[in-house]
Length: 109
Image (tube, rainbow, N blue to C red; front, top):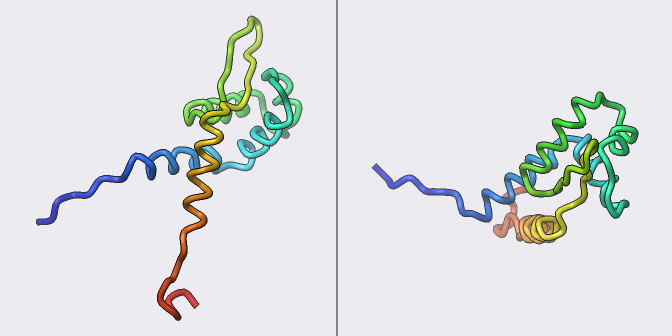
């Protein structure tokens, strides 16, 4: 029986970023944060047509993936884009989507 192959660290990281961005509300949050220096939870909630609890879940997904970071400033939490991981995500997606596909003629036509 063949040896089981592992995913590369790059593939794992790209998948984490893709999963975190895989919902329209999270894309809206990232668009909103990209326009701000920093922002607070309440500000984000006012931008989206969903419940506060749901916004919290989406923020947690983005934070767990490392795309955003938050600081507690009682009684609020301040969120901003994690610039280092955003640059990494941009590079990983760029590399992924710039691959040549279907090198043999007729394969995907």
